[in-house]
Image 1: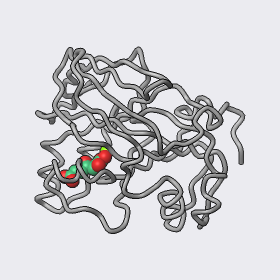
Image 2: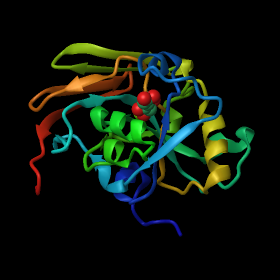
Image 3: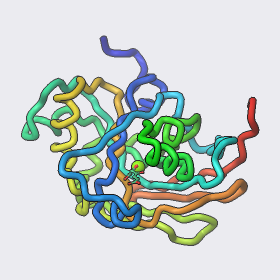
Length: 223
Ligand SMILES: O=C(O)/C=C/C(=O)CC(=O)C(=O)O
Ligand SMILES: [Mg+2]
């Protein structure tokens, strides 16, 4: 059933956050990972959202918090087993997102064959920008996304370099579970991921569309 809340505040809807990994060849390479032959995806809880004005917390168990800047796709209409041809009809718009990652925890999880929830799904692991209606972005595969830490450029990527396109991702994911109105898909990070410390300032943007800023803070155990 449709919510009475506006989709322009999708982060308040409590819907799925679906993250795609290793969708840029140069990022897979910098992680020492093989290129995927089918999309790799994982979930974050909807309580991972954080908005400008609130800090990104480095979890108490993390010693190496990484930034990953990613284009987010906001679903506007339920998509169940949709074709690639029909997939874009289910998109309401876009947002810029950070897939904050406890990289040391992820390395441990990878070694032990465990899921990435501790590494990717902690509170404040999904900073998001304002919503951009799809009419404002004629081609989401022609965007430049960038990220700076304390004013220094760390990531710059072109969404044309995605291995799996947005229609392919929507079609693929929607065969596994239905995508609902208000769901967000993070489409993967370009290269240049790196560490941030408490008090660092992250600024990220979609060239000629929007930008956002976040401070990093240290979480203490029990808070
Ligand atoms: O390959 C790895 O070790 C790590 C990959 C990721 O963290 C995947 C992503 O979240 C991404 O590519 O955006
Ligand atoms: Mg990512």
